[in-house]
Amino acid sequence: MEDFAKRFRGRLLVQLCDEEHSSTEGLPESDVKFGATFRNLLATLIEQVDHSSVDPMSDINNVIRKAYEQMSSPGCAASLYWRKLYTDACLSKAYLLISSSPRLPESIGRASIVTLDRAIIISGAPGDGSLELIWDMIKWIQLNVRWKNPVLATCDRVFTIAGEIVGRPLASTGNVMCIQPPSLVAFQKICSQSPLVLKGYVANWPAVDNWGRLQYLYSIAGPGRVVPVEIGDDYRSDEWTQNLLDWKDFICALDPQDSSHTHAGQVLYLAQHDLLKQFPALREDITVPDYVYASPGAPASYPTYRPPSNEDGLVVNVWFGPKGTISPAHTDPFYNCYAQVVGRKTVWLAPPEVSTCMYPYGPSLPGSDDGTIQHPATNTTEPLLSNTSRVDVFPASKEAAQASRYQYSAFWDAVPQKALSVTLEPGDLLFFPPGWWHAMRSEDISFSVSMWY
Image 1 (cartoon, helix red, strand yellow):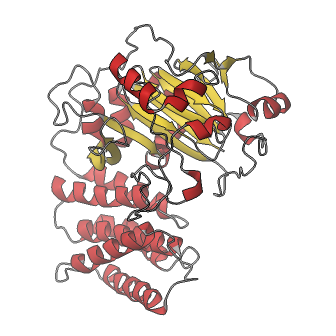
Image 2: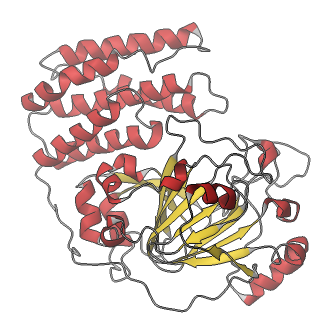
Image 3: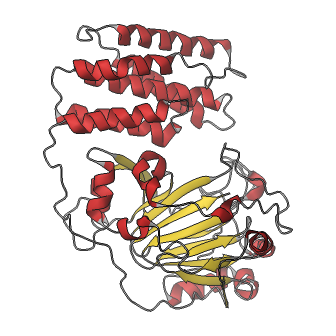
């Protein structure tokens, strides 16, 4: 693929020579040499015009595997180094797959796009120009592959609100305060104290109209894309797992009128993922509210608050899944600006002061023999801030509620009286302070955007 090589060879070589995002501080000399040797090999291969006589894929896959293991290990030294190496290896793999192929069959196109998507999903594609290079390479591949099924068969489908009345959760007695949009000064004072809702505040976002349409969601991504999806209705369950799924398959699986997909009977949830980075066209459909930049400071109930450490001090994620999807009660260390875009979602909230009654998963590390309950939901990065509760604040039945009252009596005796709830409609905006316990339940097919700040 001569045109592909001409377009991207120079830009890829620049990435391989980018040392700014490859800090080696804290790395053993053998790892530094490992990365340098690999990059030199890749640069030599990429500068060659003919790749047909060379098959470096085994070496590239080994580097991808090692970089992933290193950057995923607890307390990883030089995480940015390994993330950048992972990204460079994925870019090089996709480049060599395309440029060494005399034709561009769908299988090669898909394999290359999946490799590039992995660089965004798994490593975040650090490095100046890395993300833009990935976007451009994917776009070129999509335009030049002859796809067997380039359009959606259900292109006219729109996700709609079911219309059932939603009752108050058993685990709450109060309502979240709904107010008119305040001034920035007033917002700083109010938001640091308790949750609040601005009804319809983001109703004019293009996302509110666009993100419920299957054809739109498919068209902004194009064919061959994959996304990280949770499989299972509760991440505390032993049956819960994660996998990369084809974007087209995922959005079609959410269509209640389509029972032909391969994931029938499974709960699929795209949760806490920066989809706007992966599909940048979606970013044009939202506007980050000015309130997010109000710098409210640490609330009295959570004095250890610090804003996100990235350059923007802002972390944007999406949450997209079917009716009935539940996020168990947990805490986050940031202020949360939560926009409901498609469908309805019920949110349960309780202040940090109830933490002693929340029955969080224990902080002991795997292998401990002290009898503490250990679970994948345990917070091992900050063991003293175990942030997920064992209590189901949305019990599935009367029997489940009765069992919960018996097993977690301290919660049911003390927490509901202090807990709040609200059912968000499309266009509503919810704010709540760091450290507040919160749980979510989708009342329809639901698409939400969280902005941690």
